[in-house]
Length: 590
Image (cartoon, rainbow, N blue to C red; front, top):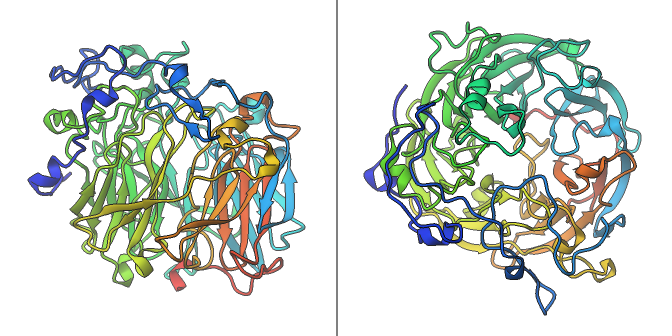
């Protein structure tokens, strides 16, 4: 495995913001060099424990002018509500809409595989269009050819065995599940090919049965997680139809760099690293890029229940049955032993920040079509611009540190759909807490026309509720508030110029008009009710967590904690097509 190739300037390009702004009350900065815990050499303790304490209730909340002041710094707290004066007593069961139309709504368990998050893909077979919606063991296949008459084609679940992934049932083999996937038309095989990520889990419950414990000072829990069997890498399937029985396994690949042969490793044994994270970037042609920590030395992250800090790999997919690793890249500080670089980051020791990749590279134009640059969102490590014109030799050419925004995910998504037209990219994290108990997650407009010197030139507007809502800020509505993602490069059709649609949790889906980058405006929105009759109360706060746009039919699917909605908008998306698409979607044929 090759180490990072970059300049010394990039090696130390981590933020130089004042460390004191990230300290808990009464804490002090330190340059202590205790690099690891005695129990596990890859649980790094580079800086003294400076995790934030609870926010002062008097330091944030609704202001006299009706705006909301966010706390400046909060600890990881994904499981509790945080009341404040002016917050609604109950969750809002009304919905709000502007310049959009609900074409259809589908509620209940068949349309809610998971209350907190799902992935989506679209495929076309025999003149029918299918939507995949899934998250690990819970998966659904819908026939969405007629938007107003969606039917469930297949349901995959482990509900009958309590969700235990170590057990097999009628849907899944032991240790198998549906990982975040890209599904692309492969010209060589004349078939859809799915690359499916397999990764380790990132919940406290995976570390210990005792709530409140994390990786720091918990060697037994860490050892238990590291010893779990399961594939860390990806699988490649040929799809000959929309159902699971139509999947034909082409290859199983481990990203564990300690394995001699990544294509012959045993998935029933413990493997090192994170595996492939979230949706691999592959358009069905030669090159694929994934986010991964190839072994346990990729450890430079403060997040208390995440053991790995992912970098990136490039793969040759000329033969999907035999993927070949080309290159591995990471930032200085991400690996055990790179303490000097890690210590320069103001987040060092806060035991809170997600640091490292979560999504693969964001690529405006595929390498096969002459594309050169890729953008990396790396949480607390900021934005890095890579030259990937030679995928076997990925090189960092530019870097930008973003202001600390702790807690929550500080950098997870980059929308590059406008880059070829404007030179701008849109960089954002997303909230992890309820009731705005963390700094607001801005969507940064970044001018990257000069890839060596990206710079922030603005932010997108903060959504505000309509007057009919009876509250002045979405923080008062209860639940999480902030941007998630704008969908994925896998969305069918060509992304419309000047349009960005974000899932915004309790603010529903928000569509921004960015045709004039100097004056971005919210052009349309749909804010659904907070929950449905089958939503458990612990999921009320996780409302709209995704939007998936069929750009070729001008339909936006909104994914919530109680079901899915099909939306149209003449003003923003154009004339909708509610029946059979004119032609099947095949990304590699654009």
